Image 1: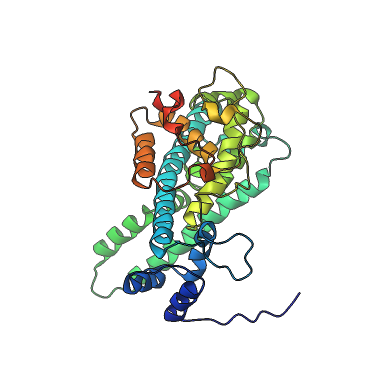
Image 2 (image 1 turned 90 degrees about the vertical axis):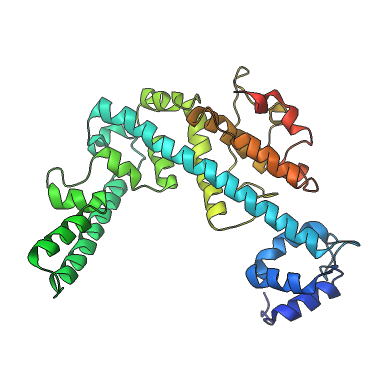
Amino acid sequence: MRQFSKPAITVSEQLALLKARGLQINDEARATLFLEAVSFFRLTPYMRPFQIPDDADHRFRQGAGFRQLSRLYDFDRRLRLLVIDAVERIEVAARAAISNHMGPTYGAHWYLNKQLFKSRYDHDRLLKSIESTQRNALKDYQREAARIEKLTQADQQRKKQLLKRRAQESYARHYTLSYDVPTVMPGWAMLEELTLGELSHLYQGLAKDIDRKIIGRRFNVPAPLLESWLHTLTSVRNICAHHSRLWNRELGIKPEIPKQQNFSWPTYLRRGTSHTRISVVLAALHHLMQQVSPHTRWHERLAELLQEFPEISHEAMGMPNNWQSDSFWNKQ
């Protein structure tokens, strides 16, 4: 352990440092604007592919330029936007699939029945979370109601209209103000309050195999595979939401790959046993998007993005250069 001694430096000093390390900067004004919009620290992981490996002074390879660096960052940013778009649609569809099966099968407040969950699932935490959501929603409404009551230029009829409107701004408010038995909202509303991580745990925590299987059929995916994919997508969503590097990232939570030979899957991902790059996530998203939105152009947008940046390494993503020729990407 040693004391941290690196100084904070200005944008002009950052440019000077990059040039001293051998990075070509042809348009300093444009590079300055880029560093003002994207911090030096955030850009650091994108520098590594252009730097001499294991060089203590972090020098750049000969010919490396700031334009290459900014293009790689722009590609990764747009890749994240494309991925988060698919994750959002799949997340919404997963909520609907669980609700559409569990509600009609077990009743509006099915999640109150602890027997529907595995013993290791933290059922009490789920209930406390929903109760907390409703308490906070009620407190927010009460604060707004107190403010409305103090309005001097509004008559009682106008105040009543405002209170009604505020009460309907969220279902958590509406339910708490309208019902007292059961004390918590129905399952279809509860599911909308969960994070993707909580939704993933809930699906995995369902006690009956038949329930998980029926929900998995909505996505044409075996239940264990859907469990794994939702878990991985939670991590990927967090990466995208925090604007972190995705292009050549090693996945911390590795998704399972289909074991059934008749499952449509890229040939290049069936080879070997370890797939830890974004390629396996892109394949899973393509499969799931085909189920959620059969007429989607998501895979075409992915191809267009890669074609726009031909210098980007496909290998760093875990994909071959001819990835698009695999029949998996041409299925409808």
